[in-house]
Length: 126
Image (tube, rainbow, N blue to C red):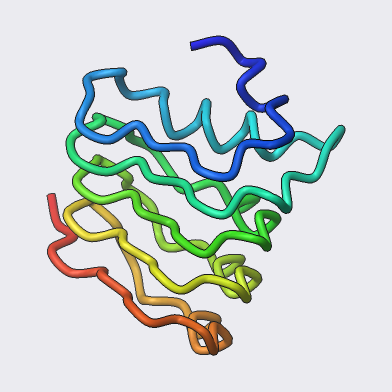
């Protein structure tokens, strides 16, 4: 997948559901949308669910995507704490991070998400 996908200025939804792209997909996708050269506040949905084999930490820069209404990264291998910057996603309605390897406490900043309708954080263990 070319890095230039992060330059798709009209892109509203990025969905890589049920594929075998590999462990770098989350880092690639998130960091390509989080470049300093263009703030991607128009991205509304990031869907990286269902055995995409993404792993590593959830980038703290995720909080820069303030237009997100859906963040779905279910059934991967994310292995960090949920970043406190998640509280910056004030438009978020759906947060799905279940079936990963997340660690630590659920950050208090989630309480700042007044429009949050669904939060799936269960079954995060090795």
